[in-house]
Length: 202
Ligand SMILES: [Zn+2]
Image (cartoon, rainbow, N blue to C red; front, top):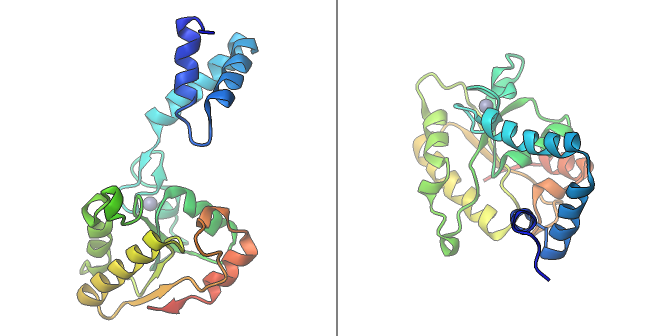
């Protein structure tokens, strides 16, 4: 059966979300239809607000409300270490382990020529600039890209660039213990903490 056009539109939009198939999209659409005007309005408003108010930090490209993220604005953080991650969602588990007090750099993905993602599509040049800047205090760069094929390729690419541009900076990679082929986002704090402490030079 076909739904009225507005319902179909909602189902179509919901089914574009990751992990949401057509059946789940229909279930969510009917849930929204059953909910009060206030509840549905709050959901719609939250989506509009997050798109309006959240952008990327001008320093590290983490998510930020305003020009800089809370980590870059925090003077108590150690400016001599930068932890490089693929996505803003990777910062959350790293912060949760309470092991790390340095800064971050969010690449915006990983190198994947098959999918058309080249070095220029990521914030790699920005990272190299940040590390090799004349006033840079950075002594260590921790490559915390995901332990996947694309994450490893990205780490190696960055390590090569850093060796060339900033040879005095120590470059480390998270130790094993992380499940191979999975995302940082899904690692528990203990595993992630152990991998962080055991990071090695690359
Ligand atoms: Zn930042």
